Structure formats: structure tokens, C-alpha cells
Image (cartoon, rainbow, N blue to C red; front, side, top):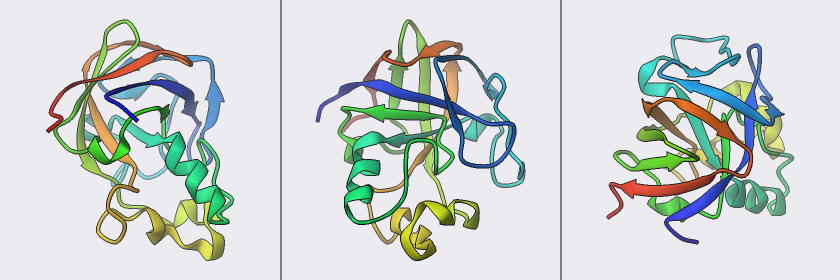
Length: 159
């Protein structure tokens, strides 16, 4: 794992989970164009514009017996090749040709993703219980378009 990786999958939905793959999407300060959330009290907004998760964590969870797959936990970008333990609040990522994101917080899993976990064990990706296994929220510092295969680079905040 390193300080650079790539976009494995871009995911969006008309509301709810799973989010489904698309080849590319416009990124604005409000999130991915065409993506919606059913619960705006807990999801979305400028500080939670995008949800990011690690392909490697998803594969490890599958090996543990969870039926999770890319997009199942509601992440907008499934990223591969990054040192996920180093992706936390304050980290800035450059995606593709100029989209810049800043991780704002770890997410709190909610019951809507229970089907992605054996026995509904959503706490398996709760940061407090399993550090380094959480998804993260990010704000958009620079808009643009993200595509499957785009390079992702940690540009600040790694430490």
C-alpha cells in the first residue's frame, strides 16, 4: 500500500443502498451529480459530500464471510491501493485531473447497510471498535469529474 492508488469504482444511487457503479460522475461541493441520500440529517452536505471506502477492506471483509461488495456500504468512491490506515480526518486526496478532497471524519455505520454484514454486524466498520476499518466522509475542495481508473494521490495531511 502507498500514498497513491486509483478509483476502482464510482457509485451513486437515487437514494439508499447499495449505490451502483457508473463509469464517471461530476463532483461538486454537494457531492456526486445524480447521487441522492434518503436521510439528509445524517448523510450528505458540504462536510459529507462524498463517502470513500477501501477496496482492500471490502475484500478482507468478504474473506471474513460478510456479503459486502463495492457500493454496498453506500460509498461514492471505492478506492484501491491506498494505505487505508493513513486515510483519516485532515488528509487531502487528489483524484484524477484535479479533483481535490479533504477527509472530514470517519463515518458511523447505520442499519441501512446491515445486509452487507453477516448477522447485520455493522459495528465491524465502526472506527471506535475497529480502527482503520471505517469509511470516511470528505468535503470537495476542487470540483471536476472522477472516472474509474483515475489516479488517487495523498497530497497533504499524511503524517
